[in-house]
Figure 1 (cartoon, rainbow, N blue to C red):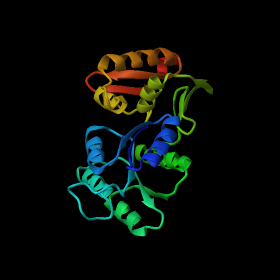
Figure 2 (cartoon, rainbow, N blue to C red):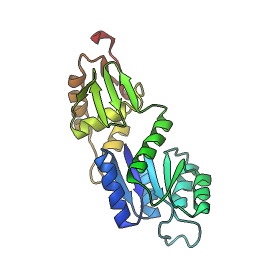
Figure 3 (cartoon, helix red, strand yellow):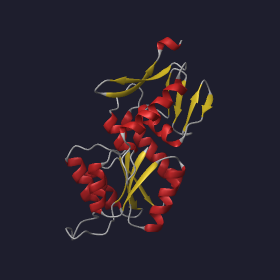
Length: 232
């Protein structure tokens, strides 16, 4: 998953970021409402982890927390990215404000890092309409284990190939454009170009040969993972 973490506390943000990255997720960090709004507009994310109590910007001087500004702006423009709001455990009004503004779930501080990842995974699963395990032919993606399997044997993939195939399997049968793949997999300081993306696709195709799963190119539309009847 690609996750936007919106949190201004350096210690907490680094702990959460390390935990999510150890779980093989890609994490971008925003420390203010301005940064959050910018990232949210220019990048495609699977989920947002949002602290409501960000420092007030020069444009704000009141409210329960400036994180609500970014959340309301996103929902008003039709963005349905799942949002997990972080709140102070004893601030019921924060939870209500976040949910009313369009948040999908909330988690009170302090929290367990493992629960953060589990809740984000559940939100993405709900949004995509898939379970923790999805399969095409003999290819299985186990999101909980963060691994691919072929005929019950673990399939070892380099990190970037894993990310590409995970995107195409969320869910299987969904056409993903080159533009969307590039946006989801690009680093903050560089764009994943078409040549690099095509190289990853080519290597994955070779590894999936004969498994009953294949990556198809739909000209002008993008890529899709689907069953390969010819492999049976």
